[in-house]
Image 1 (cartoon, one colour):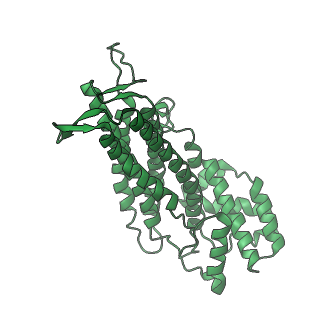
Image 2 (image 1 turned 90 degrees about the vertical axis):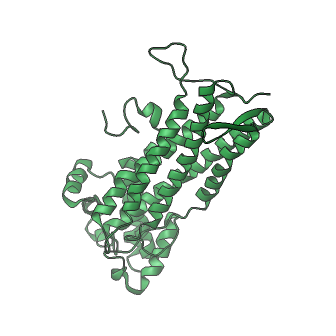
Image 3 (image 1 turned 180 degrees about the vertical axis):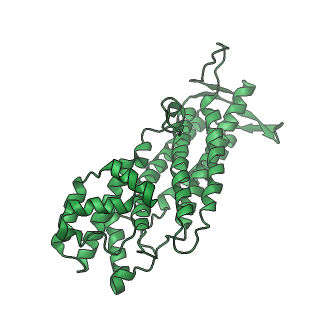
Length: 348
């Protein structure tokens, strides 16, 4: 039993996503944090800040290092963040001499925020592909049923007849916008040191940050440790995606309620009424849209990030953003399945 429906033993069958969930696992987070430390060492060696041999050894150890997870758990309960114990363990692993060159100029937030950006970049790439698949499915429905007629509704009342193409265009247009926004999304490295000033690196700080970003395939950007717009932007995009998919789900549920203008395969069964095929996927899209809309308000609360670092606002992001990503993943998965299950739309 788990507290999250996204990895619950049976609710995850409806709300989970086996492709996306691993990116929010402890293992993925650790791999990304190790990537940060290895890349930082290489970047600092390239600017002569640490010896090349130390950077080589740090990168080599990071490639195969497995921390003591119970120790990380206990230390996080004490420190409020995993990085101090993580770095302590890693320093032991690299040895006394190379340890002097590890994590130079960095702070816990640099490691954690950059780990998140590394993983979100991969997730967003997958989301863009799913949006393309859904759009292609809608195009297929348009070719097959676009000339058919639907009754248009305004304010939940019958208005005038429209074509299936008209409805499909309303579904498809925002998805194409989101796909473009995802492919253009920036994923900035976070590297500011103790208070965001890169004080330990002196005049080399900006050049090292640029090299670090290049090593990790992220965007070089000024520190954003207390300016959480990158988080709010991606969360807002997640909420918009699930919201537009929820609109599709709601429309399809209403079409199924009327029963004359749509035929869908793969509906859910009822324990009490064997004749029913419930529009489960459509309903779940509505629920996920509302979930993300609600969670987004919490992310916006985390913009109130006092002074140079906020433990409270930062922790709030950890509670909300992974759940929003998983809700968006489930929305995309379910929408793709739902569009593929439409067997008839409109009347000829």
